[in-house]
Image (tube, rainbow, N blue to C red; front, side, top):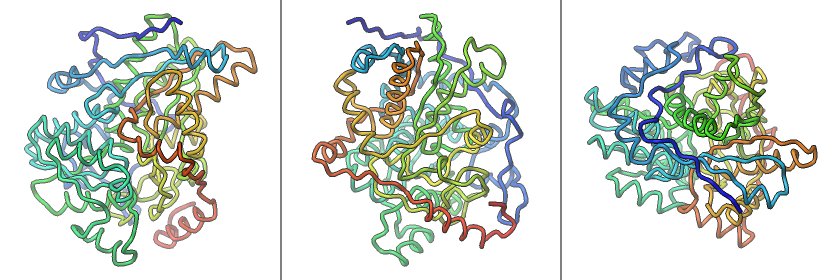
Length: 458
């Protein structure tokens, strides 16, 4: 059975990141203070370096990648693009399925694409330590890897349930020199406040973000680093989409569908935004569709409300316009820890609002069933997060089979699952539950949000 890997040469690495802000269907609503006033660049200086603040708000469409960042990227980039011949044959579909394999990076996911850039810019501005949060550990391990390369210290607040479920992610972070703290912790006011109310709190990304932001804001030597959601993070990931576009050109293909899983939105934006640019600029040869996939246990875009909300539980971050389940959302303990976030990237949410991108949700049992099919056909074991994208790809491929359509489907294989085998063990043992977050809980959370900010329109 033929199978090929499409690989661009080293000197063909993209030299620019793509900033989607100039090409959105309407201007992105600005971050707001609790008073309703827009946040200014100077308001962000306590937690971010100047260059990242500039990129966050820039209207420059293409931002040059520094040579020092490209030098690190070359440790694993360009990453291969595979065609999933064996999966296609197992499904009996006329669709062509391609996947960009981001598990090639040292931490095993797409996350270093922005971690390296953020560590570089912080180092250049004299920052000594970065703080961050992590869910499943992909982002934490990526930042530990990057800060180690650029001589920075790193403090990582890891969601407690993941800290306990995924000990080898913690070990990986510590190998690269990071300090890993289970969240909620007694290290911060935000963490202590949560533990006073609920001593056995399982943690959430919202709580971990609060702790990391507080740590950075209260120490002069530190800045905060975010692995998803904000614009500067997403644009660093677009090197994935540019590489995939070049690789598909080599076989005269352009995707009819671009698919990715979404927690905060970085890996999906990374592969989809360059193709969106081709579509809105009139350069795309097909009417490409974009499919964002999330868990039913944390259905931010499929059940959440598009409104302003905080990105963290303690309300230390600005209010962002996004689809949200409420900043006090406590997710069920699903194994796709990187998808357990109450909101999503404001740029992505705006595109969903305008029906430019579609969102779908699956429960973890059907997702793991699809992951097993992928592992048995293509060989690679996907991370639980990545498996959500694969489930949507399989559904699209089977739909193509029913309709007799020869679709080209591209998805981001955002990370391998070799450090997630405990989750697969529970799946094989029949212990996984098909969690679904109730709409009633979303409504109650948003009622509490509105009581805090009566000026909000929900």
